[in-house]
Image 1: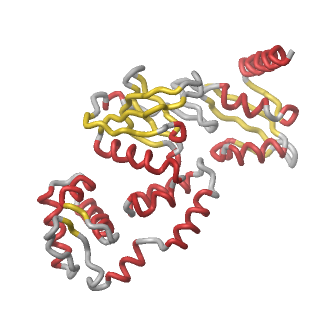
Image 2 (image 1 turned 135 degrees about the horizontal axis):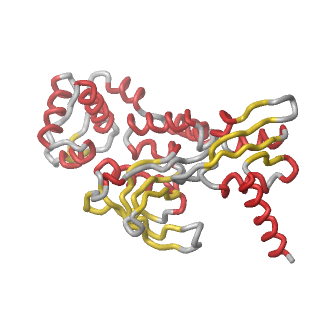
Image 3 (image 1 turned 135 degrees about the vertical axis):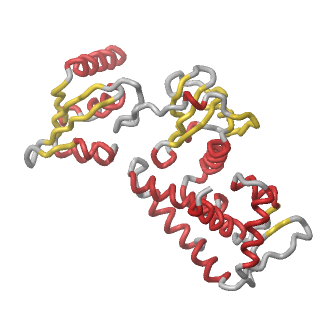
Length: 303
């Protein structure tokens, strides 16, 4: 282990033990994926540095609030309720696809104990599931996604998967589906509950993220689309899909060119069909035919 990695882990453990919650040695070692012997050695280092860690008569360790500089460290490392509320409002005001939001969330998760900040980073109803998924990814374990709702089949069923990474801002989870033997994304809001199994990954060599377009569709294949946008369409595209902004070029004050690869016509098709005369499809011809069939189906369904 590098000195930098060791120092980071020790700092994270210091935060963990200063939260006011008492922890067993086994819990500490599991939390940081280290042996109990290493965890105890770190605790001894904290003691030598002047932190008061009482002998665990009841089997639990913690940093005593009477330790030198405890107040300063505690104030630096943790949010008050008011600070957490303000941070929550600020983070959730940023689009889920914003890369700065993603980086902020990753850093906060790296620094703070989950129980302290989960409600600040993710929506309350999803926080427990995301925590279980994070633990499964870290320990390389399989999970069951209980009652996962599929938008394609409109049904709910359990999914046995190997989760290995999150998409931007924890909107979805990349996982290897053991039923289909393929890698796919699972929307975290569609998961009822997550059960982490005591079974290690068996297909790590097959864990691969597929390319994902700005409309949040993933696929092995991509095709270039070219659209002419009005001011309104341009602004709506940037608001709804912020990652699309780098593919937009202003031609004049009233016209904007969007040219980007897409993994499917589904995502970009929904956007175009929702704006009518605000968007002109320039390329490819296959996309025009796709839209024509969709419009005809809508007309037939309404007749």
